[in-house]
Structure formats: C-alpha cells, structure tokens
Length: 185
Image (tube, rainbow, N blue to C red):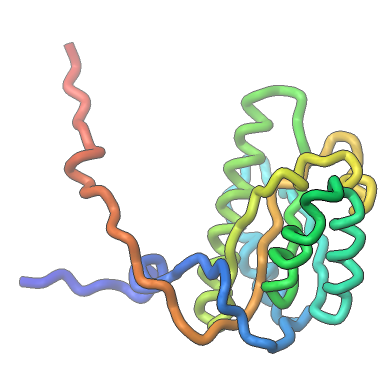
C-alpha cells in the first residue's frame, strides 16, 4: 500500500529555490507582510522572536541596488549590479544576536525556521524565493546603509520574484544512509 503524501509534505518536496528566470512582476508589500504574519509562528526559544525585516519593494529596487553596489570594490560593481537586478524585490532578515552561544544558536535556529516557513508559504503563492548569504551581508558599510544596529546580524537576503519555469528537483541522500539508532552500552 502506497503512503499518501500530505499537503504539507507535498509543498516541502515541491518547493525550489528560485535563483534566476524571474518575470517582470511586482512583489507587493501586502503579500510579503501576509506571508510573514504566518512565518513568524516558527518555533523560537522563550518566544524571543529574534528577527526583524527590511523589505525592498520592486519600486525601490534600482535605488537599493545602486546603494549596495556603491559599497563594493570597483571590480565587483557591474557583476553585483547584474546579479542583484534579477529578483523583483528583497526581504532582508536581521537577527538579534545574543552574547551566550546557546541563545545565539537558538536564535539562529528560530530565524532559519522562520525563513523556511516563509519560503514554503511563498511557494504556495507561486512566489519564488532564494536565501542568499553573499559576502555583502557581512560588510559594515551595508550594515550602516540598512541601519543594522550593534547586537544585530544580517542572516541573509531573500531574493523574491515570480517565475515561469520551475527548476528540476535534485535527489536527496536516502534517510537510511543518514540514520542510526542509539543502542546503550
């Protein structure tokens, strides 16, 4: 008997990171906010909610790209301008950092869960997302540009956009190869 795949499992398996091939269609602030209203239900220790968001709408994208490109060395500017011009909008995820490693890791896990929630919810709306951690997310000039405060970290730029063709899935390693059962001594 074949196991029925649940709706949640179906979305998890079908979701793809959309890295290119975006169409010229605006990503609305209303949609992003609605997706975030559900995505924030990610598990987070002590309900610290260690995240905040910076949305770059389609209408501000060109200005944003130029300001980001201005932080870069001359030899990278044209490449990064072309790269950043592909998605229709950006959602920048900022995390509150903690001085204790345990809390820092809990916060990062919570933010990662929120990003996965956002990606799955966006996929249901046929909005493509890819989580990018390019070098500029560590640049103090970018932090200043985005008003990222001491005690905060940029976790990534989510590139957002509608798309025409879905990338093919890539195989996953079988669970049997990654699974062990503890047997006490």
